[in-house]
Image 1: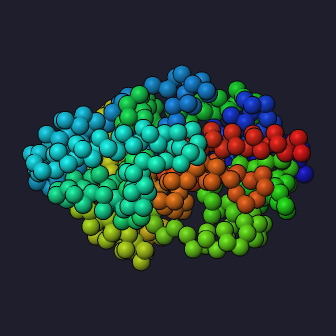
Image 2: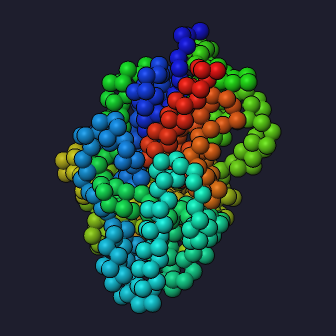
Image 3: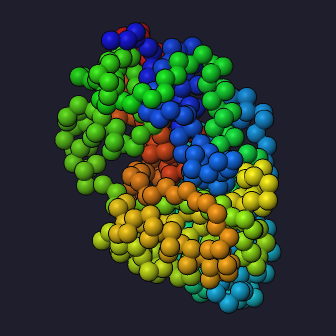
Length: 471
């Protein structure tokens, strides 16, 4: 039995660190429990590649909450690349470069489809305008109803349907990459969420911090320590103690730690089905979560190279996604536990923007593979073989340049849905268990490295703690 805290935060990843720090700065006694030996979660640097600072969690940032930099004093956060363009790779070498300059992008599109150039310009303008209007919901957690007719249409529309007015398959496939599952109802709104984000003061930009996202994690660890949080690593939570309300947690060692509130960085399913007492979530919520078991996820690979890969295009975010139909085919095949015939790949040459991420003379190619089965046939070896083959169609001789690699297989995350995107933050943060809150990626509108869920969950928990104390 351990002393009582105001709040226990489960998980020392980005959102857990953010939530704990905000609560501590508000005067709460906070205990952060991390199962692994090292803090940082998916943002920490690869342990399998000595001297490499790149992370399997992300090669760049698209949705970091701007409030964190000011509120938590992250003044050392600097960026090696402020605005990476999207490059849709084509087998014929006529790659499609889509940057934030809508006019330049339209000219690039016109070279392949003149009709699409004007359609894209209009579509992008509508999405960016709606994204800015949606920031009170997605940035500040406000739940005011939106009457915008485009919002009403997109929250039930699929990205596939929204993109149907475009002619070019490579263009549609490139835009759809940001839609999660572009065939699903509400996935069109995911494009708006992406356009609502801001990096380095630029709307819809992708940015790379100096030192990678691991540098961001390091800064948050320092901020958490400075706030006076008690941090325990190698402390795996086995159970959340609760009856009518949360009472604390039990570790896998049997130790029980008591607390007035618990904030979990884990998914909603893991928190309520695996850690909470049986039926604590209630019948309807338990049944819904059991039905919503994820079958697919994204794999991440870091390739350490002795020579830089050449994609024949400006450095950017390289996409391999030729057809919109490939997304539907990939999901269908992945649900059977098989690897799709056409892999959907996002790749960034991280060291092109920040050479410090690898030892001198070496290069890091960071890859994300979208929509794979959680337990693929052939495991990591088959994924690596297939990814290298797909990449070598665009950057020859890649295989002979690889001197090391690290891979993260697909894992369970909260399932995408249009309802999740359109919901207020309180609906994703709060749970049926009194005093139990979610502060991880699943509390975000989309799975992303943001920190916003941690900040807003801390605010909701702080308000609950204040009310509970008065009661």
